[in-house]
Each structure stands twice: as C-alpha cells, then as structure tokens.
Length: 80
Image: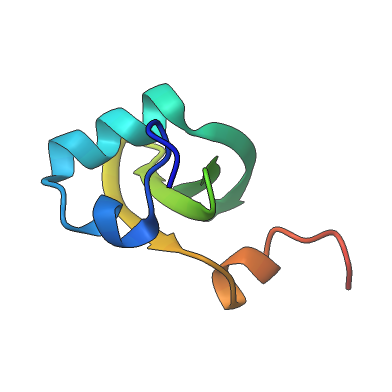
C-alpha cells in the first residue's frame, strides 16, 4: 500500500469526523443525484467510493456509505 493511500477497511474503522475529512479533502467528486428532499453525492477515494446523503432543505449531512462496487455505484451510471 502506498503511504498516502487508504483502503476501504482502514477508512471504515476511522471515527466519522476523520472519514468526512478524508471524503471532502482527498475524495474526488464524481456526480450527484437529487432524490426528493435528498441530494446524494458520489466521491472516489483511492480504490473505493463514498456516497454522502444531504438534506436539501436543512443543508445538513444525513449519512454516508462507503463501498467498492454494486447497486449504489450502478445508479450513477448513464447506462440504462
């Protein structure tokens, strides 16, 4: 593992404030979607992704999900 890279497992054991720091300072913004009152933003970090869920009305973060592949990533694909 390169010194500056972080694995999904290393990321998941960090406290939330450190995880958000990595997402917003190291993550590369990929795309977003609007789902009713929620905005979902996708970030790439080294070899995994993080989806951050925001409340549009209150402008607050509700949740985050870290993953490598699967259904969450598929919904950001333009392929139908």
